[in-house]
Picture (tube, rainbow, N blue to C red):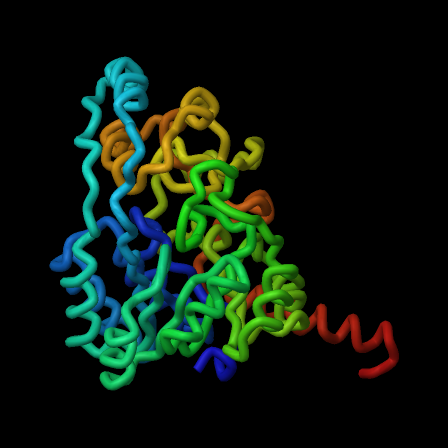
Length: 348
């Protein structure tokens, strides 16, 4: 499916608001492929988004599900005590640091019933039986991986495609398990290195993601063996995206560095550095989604210094254009890059 796209660009699923039916449809209509994010919304909200997307584009699109992990045994009481006075300063009440499965089973049944063309999974592996059920309904299965080992596991349960996430990616790391020690929850690979290692480990088609913004970036991952490039940060400034206004402003300024942190959710994620990340990042436990629920009311205040400003390392290169214009520009840049290389080496 992905190797036949008119433009080998995929709009990444971005939970928490940025991924909208309008964004998915705009990318689709420009020749790319869009994903809806099922994370952090109700089953009813997901159903409405799928229905609305189907009304905006006749082309196939995908839905991404968060695979629930095991309940963390980490003691987060000290982090709760740390966050409480901070929350009060910004006029918020800390949330209940509970564990939940994001209504995974019900969302899985929904995409199965609606025969969503592509279903992707992040944070772990779906059951092999569920993979076969989805395939029988006509769905293509994509699993997000960060290491060759995870890719081999994805292949074993019947995944059709792996989305290989490099360490430059914005938002949550797609690691199956967080080691609780290293900044990224495990070994970090740059996007190109991850592609090469995964392609050596499995025979599945590879989607590349992590720090990709321009047509030259897309050319690089295609040359490394990917069938398409998945971009998230590149679309955060689009008018079709549901990106928070404060985050849009911070992205446009382009002045902040990025860092991996567990401060906001209890799972490693890359975002723009702000006061909350600096003050609480070193103390955050590996306890997802407990920490996510704890800090959610604080982040919801919309204050830039306490928000989770997810973004990849190359975010200053992103532009605030309509999604269709971005896809078309990347397509032009991709062609220019290929032609330039051909001319340089006399193979045009």
